[in-house]
Length: 405
View (cartoon, rainbow, N blue to C red):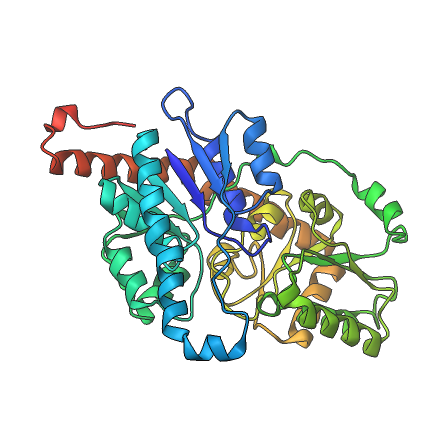
């Protein structure tokens, strides 16, 4: 089994966690996984510690001419060089890798819009290949649609993703929707809420809210920042935690957040804690966990993490989280990008702690019933088995000799 993570921007998000849980949940007496990443990260370290072979294959830097005139004059040449160096050559190299390691199935991570050389390599070697579709993309190129149709299966993490694919011309016949599941046993506590209060000088009894996620415009942290400006009038000691990394491309957005915080005079109330590989400890500290994306979130694995702790959730009405959070039952749903609505929902939960606790407990039960790792693994392995059996039958292997992974 060969797993490829397609993300290369330097941030570690939910796709990495899903891949880790999937690999670690495999029966190692039946499967020998190999994982590939574009850069070193804590997920790769954890997989190595569990005896999984991990390969780091840094992304290729596109070729460009140093002088502006050459770039303009020889643009077709540059395009041809990058097509060969970034697509053709890797596909041939990857095909050789699949043959050498006798890979029986490739599981690509992220989207049909990525990992195209690996898809071609699988086609060249007739290796069964599936991909997880984890994003709501603005468009799908003809190449993505062409290769996507030739995959053995496309596993969509939510109906929201599948609906977006269909709306954008990628209505593929090989899509199956399998919701995320998380391994709740993985979340060992490293720092207690009391330790985190002391670490960040949060007064005892001060209500704590927050968002866990990379600092990006579409994640909507500005909404909770402005909601904090409203909530502070009622809860002067309120603390809002923003836990997540940013990349150079996000710096302007982060600076905008800091400017908004200064303009609202809430520097004391908002805490930037950066990337945390123990982010769930910060959720343990929070009285209310918020999910604030202003563009449809593909799934939102942090909602499951909050549910595993029995935390009340406030999420937006768009994307995958709307399939996870049952409004008024396991949390509250609000329109995206509306600070006043978010503030009202959070205040409702802070003011009625008993109702908030009951919502959190119902969320914990919903996680157990609908979004367990066991259920996710079982359904994913069913896809693997079907794919492998169909491929073997096409190659003329009798039904009773087909592979049962």
